[in-house]
Image 1 (spheres, rainbow, N blue to C red):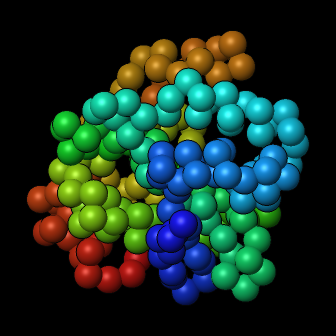
Image 2 (image 1 turned 180 degrees about the horizontal axis):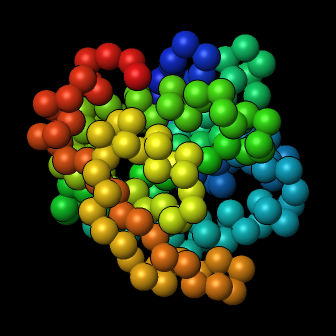
Length: 188
């Protein structure tokens, strides 16, 4: 299977789609799946297998994830991509995360998101990219505004986290804003 790889100065981003997940779960052993997905326990793997079995994509909704690897060590350090892509509406929700705190505050997610946003608008032909973040997530707020996302509003009791409903701020960037910016022409 041919995998799409995007490269930045310090990172390598490996694209995962529903078709890649189909291949992984149909052809690789559980040990190979653990390694490929960067999962450390069989319990976590079973949870991911169950998500796949129940269907992560539908006739009008899909996803495109990118695993984030450190180019120097080849170690999986995080993920970013579009976990809710409404193909009929040319919009997707972007998400991202680093595996542990030791990778934070080094500009890695800024470096990773630039090609992912470009990929969304240029390759996926998105018109709108959305992000939902917790109100106290200041690093994500700064990251999104750095890329030209605008806060549109507040979704009350939007996420259930550890038994508590939390509000989310909704951010977006539209293709005309993206095309008018320097995001698609430079590195941030």
